[in-house]
Amino acid sequence: MFSRVNFNKHRVREIHGGEVRPRGPVIYWMSRDQRVSDNWALIYAKLKANELNVPLRVVFTLAPAFPGANLRHYDFMLKGLAEVERSLVDDGIPFNLLRGEPAEQIWEFSERVEASLIVSDFDPLWVKRDWKSQLNQRTSIPHHEVDAHNVVPCWYASPKLEFGAYTLRPKIKKVLSSFLTDYPEVTLRNKSESNPHHTRWHDALVWLNASDEVKPVKDFEPGEKAARKALDDFITNRLRGYAEKRNDPTLDGQSNLSPFLHFGQLSAQRVAIEVLKAPAPEADKEALLEELIVRRELADNFCYYNPGYSRFAGFPDWAKETHRIHRFDVREYLYTLNEFEIAHTHDPLWNAAQLQMVNTGKMHGYMRMYWAKKILEWTTCPEEAMRFAIYLNDKYSLDGRDPNGYTGIAWSIGGVHDRAWPERPIFGKIRYMNFEGCRRKFDVEKYIKMNLG
Ligand code: FAD
Ligand code: FO1
Image (tube, rainbow, N blue to C red; front, top):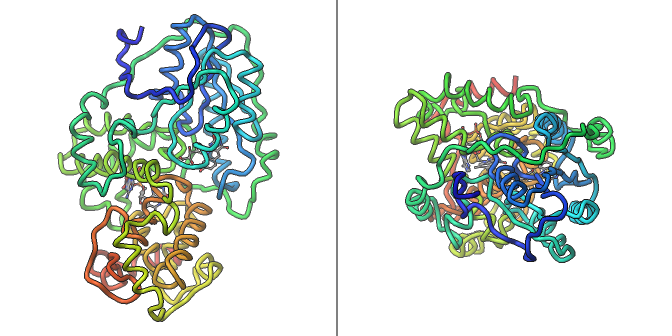
């Protein structure tokens, strides 16, 4: 069965034992990869259901309080999931939205339907790993995990924490051709005839009682179809010139795909396949693929193999040492979390970046580095800087609560995946960025006007 379909077996691993035997349905517990097309976890679950000659069911567990999530995120996510449900039901696959503690919900559901196998999608973050270990301590049903997010599965790309892009890149390049393949079509044999109940999505949003302090975004339409449209628009209009435009915050030079990639409404592998086919300069394609495959997978590597990914403890030793030496350097400016949050600092460029994130849900990638590094400079210590940066990024960024975010912030404040630079106050040997440096790179006044109005 598997041999006929091009499914690389390194994409899946057994995270809970017990023999898979044909009883009730196979369950795909969808979480990180919230899409029907281009989803290796769904493909694997279909293949197993066909092999066992049992039906397939897809469930999503709505956690009551996902860390840092509010109405902005839930509005985007639930609309995307409603589209997933429609596509699955059209394909004869029942979908259930379960509400409550995920491990408990999955345990009860899988016991009730006497599941033959549980399939989940890989996520390196603690919140998900805790859910899965709680489930695996209780259930006797085998549980297989598929990395549907990375082109090269995280555990296969490297068995250990990587120092930087320069150490992971060759490992990925070596095996990329056996993973960057097109997605096979798999037809489920045992489709469900009955048209199962439809989720009451509005009730789910009310049940979440999510804070509406942060309003839903206007510039991003949620869901798989909109994500694919955004990809096609990027390839048609912004791939050419991406290499040099992507770092200018006054230009619309980025792909704007991160919210869709974060919620799994778009497959990074699909992006790579379509970009490689596109009639655009090699330099632009290479630049995009470096970010999309190497940088993004480096972030999963960092979060998966470094338990302290969101804390000072996760910094490399040289960075901890340099922060120790400069811990009590005088700070010329100090701001509270609230002053940062309402963009009340002395620096109009920083304020513009903060307001871009608050108002649109997405800060330009180049400004994210400057934004986080200034938080290091204007807080009492690097631990407080980490807390503030993560709190604000997770609260306002549509693509927040993501391995890319924790890694990007640790890179900015703790030198993760970076090297030591000439020593200076407060930063020590952490790479420094300042207003003058930005002025040399782009028209700062224009960016400030764009975002401060
Ligand atoms: P593009 O430049 O078009 O890149 C395409 C894709 O490549 C991105 O969607 C992303 O998946 C990947 N990518 C690009 N740059 C990086 C990077 N530096 N690290 C990892 N992957 C990358 N990214 C998030 O997805 N969520 C976050 O919360 C987040 N927070 C960040 C915080 C800081 C302090 C820093 C320095 C970076 C952060 N990033 C985050 C990484 C990067 O800035 C964003 O992925 C990128 O700006 C998203 O916009 P885009 O999709 O238009 O990017
Ligand atoms: N995943 C879930 O399985 N259940 C949730 O209720 C849930 C809420 C949520 C809210 C905001 C957000 O940014 C992500 C959320 N996710 C949820 C996880 C998401 O699917 C991603 O897997 C991770 O955040 C990225 O690793």
